[in-house]
Image 1 (tube, chains in turn yellow, blue):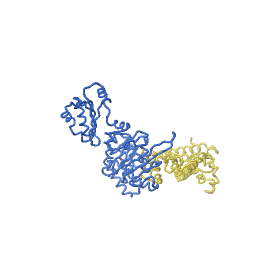
Image 2 (tube, one colour):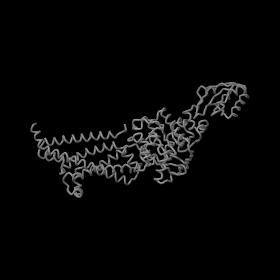
Image 3 (tube, helix red, strand yellow):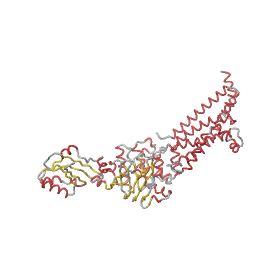
Image 4 (tube, one colour):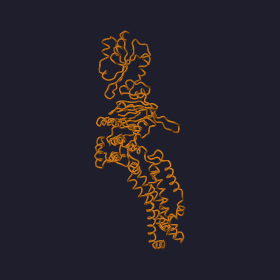
Length: 224
Length: 340
């Protein structure tokens, strides 16, 4: 037992930098998920038949993008987009490079989450805004987004947690982070303690994200 | 003034072509509370939703104060909609905004400055009697209170017309009464035109000036409340009226009609001041008949007394005939009940 602790103490710096790398990858790709995924989701919903800007072809394309993006396993996506990653970041190795496939996975995920969140809004509320003479843009920013905010925050929480797990996979191809440590030290060098510690850190990270997400969502939720 | 001409709405559903509204014509005067009643599926919801083009008509025109809504560009339509308030059965308030935020919402859409919005919203919240709830969220309110917020919100841009889509249908009787009173009050204070749809005749009876009865996408009967209640023509209208006023004779009377009896059984219907005149005592005094009251009910529709009375007249046949003629000459509706 004593050996285990002294063992771990030697890797403290490594663990801290690994955790920070994971958080960095998650935060960056979450940012792109918000910037890309929420508009994607909003556009998908409002172009549905019967919604505020029905447009069948556009809806078909957007819905298709989301479905295709979500159907590619992350490990394959990561490898498949390497040329694209090189083009943007200049390299395919490291945390910055990992952010590219992570974002590409998170955007359609967040798109679907947003789509579902907005679909949950009672159509009557949208209609009442229309009856007041609201424009589609006003409806998006004053009705759809504020009304679905709690659900979108829970969706962001869900996306963050998926990103934590995806980022561990990114580690396997040189992306850095806790996944990278778990593979290199825990698996390849048989350092069981390191493996366990990364797992514990990941579990705590996910718990904290979920807790924070729930708190923020309920702060904005006035439905009951 | 609102003028609807040849309005038609067809749509396609799973079961095929649905003719929701079929060549409907209607005129509603300024400051009027106009009710539309009909069974479910009659097209009343489709009709009221077409009045602000939430539902697009297949053909026909909807003229509000000289503007044909169906001709407007979408931008002009949005402007026109700001002057048409609407309240809904399920209130449709924004859950993420407080009462104040909800009432200020249409002003925000209309681009009113923040300070002015707050002031106006507060006035309206006071008007509907919810000043102490201004910072509450809709989820913290009762149904009646939510509808009051809906009304305040609908009035925010000083509309000329208020559309009410089954606004009291999910409220308890007490809240229904107070919401209807509020609608009557704002009509009087703001000289607003109100068009409401409902399936409850009680709502029509309590606040409407005129009513149209809708069946299968068409108006089958239309008139002032008193006229419709006192002289309903169509069976459906009678059915609706009987839900609030008992027209049917009790079993006891029907049995009595069928028995052998010396005199004549008559039913008198009366409306308005006539209830104050002493017809029955006139009858007894001047025509030497005995009048025995078997059954009667008197109701009031918006302050106008309205009722029916079943009398058993006994005496000489000529006297009875003369007395019936007298009642008729006084403008009462008299029916001789030979077979009911």
